Amino acid sequence: MSGGAAAGPLRRLVVLRHAKSAWPEGVPDELRPLAARGRRDAPAAGRALAASGCLPDLAVCSTAVRTRQTWELAAGQWGTPPPVRYDSRVYAADVPGLLEVVRGVPAEVATLLLVGHNPGLEELVLELAGEGLDDTLERVRAKFPTSAIAVLAWHGTEWTALGPRTALLTEVTVARGREG
Image (cartoon, rainbow, N blue to C red; front, side, top):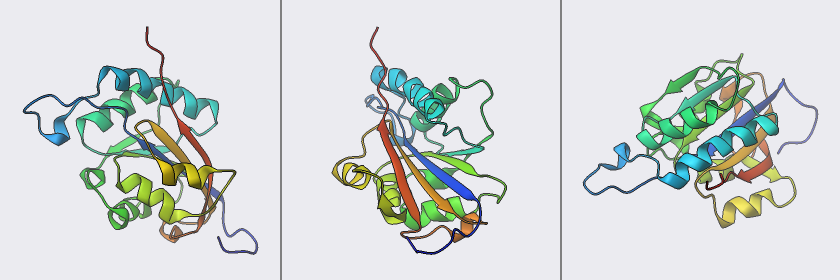
């Protein structure tokens, strides 16, 4: 991260990897639904985001079935979910593709939730994080499993200014629901 005074308001990019998916025979990858564990973990992700004060102003979600289901179950834990944009570019995206999506977000959005897939999400977090609090960077490098949430904070007037090592990785959580 660059030193000096903060330039612009605090912004947060919240990255959520979809919950655990099923692998039904003959179903194309983009159409795979959540598994039973995923249907338990996705609402837990929504509760974790609410508990940490990371509710988004806007969500951008991959068009894959498992990401849509993750979003719907997570957002169902909040009183009034924010608007969501389903964007096919998030599915199977690499870092440049994900950055293109994020940089297209309107300036009035202070907290953005990006719901997508690995390896792109993990690589995006590691690319953007100049530093991490505690052991957050090491945890992401070790594994960014299903239902993982990473929170990146940075100061900027426009999302277009977000780039390599410009953010602080403030939180990493893996949401897990209970069987029952």
